[in-house]
Image (cartoon, rainbow, N blue to C red; front, side, top):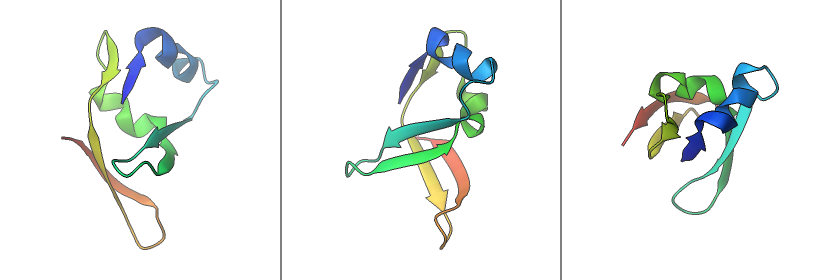
Length: 65
């Protein structure tokens, strides 16, 4: 995943609250952008992440891999 500092401005302005991403198999996922906040630095957001969901596909945890 890669989001520039400029792209993240929409989030901080309250215009965007969810992000779409593709998993390793190409499946599109939607999840709240705020769960990635701790991984944002002055350049934006970069990295690969592992998302864990429950039986109802609700996000339980996320970590950088």
